[in-house]
Amino acid sequence: RSDYWNNVKPFIDTYLTSPSTDSAVKNRLYQSMLRPDSVFSVDCLQKIDSYSLGKKLKALNLPLYLINSNFHPNDTASFQKNGIELHFYSIGSTGHYPMIEKPAEFNRLLQSIIYSAGKSIH
Image 1 (cartoon, helix red, strand yellow):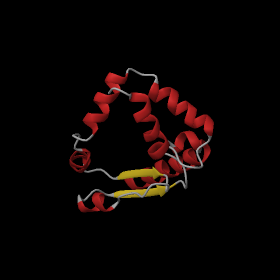
Image 2 (image 1 turned 45 degrees about the vertical axis):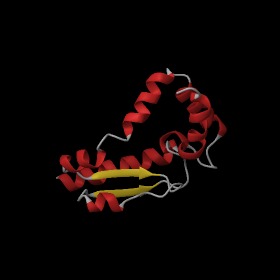
Image 3 (image 1 turned 45 degrees about the horizontal axis):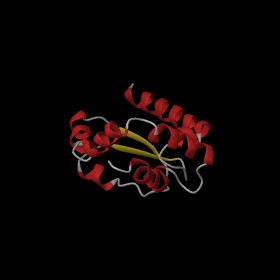
Image 4 (image 1 turned 90 degrees about the horizontal axis):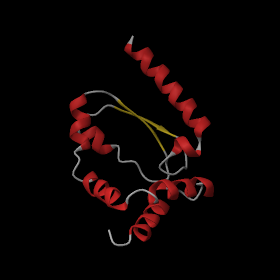
């Protein structure tokens, strides 16, 4: 809380970007994450740990479609352990926001997923 910038900037550099992330994207993230009210942002970050995402996803009983970067390992075992149907699509090396770093590829994957999911519903 006392030094928001110097605590959040390394988080952005380590977890939200990859070595392949363009500097313009990094600057966009810095601006969007470091300009808001730091009190509100810290409160949100602290509450993330207490949110039971796994339980809520399991309760939905719907398949989960993920378009993820391969820069950080993806824990698919916890989804399987909780009986959550998972469809995983890798977009390669990007940071946390592949839709910003590789928008054309992301949109192609997303359209493919929507088309495939729609076919399986009918």
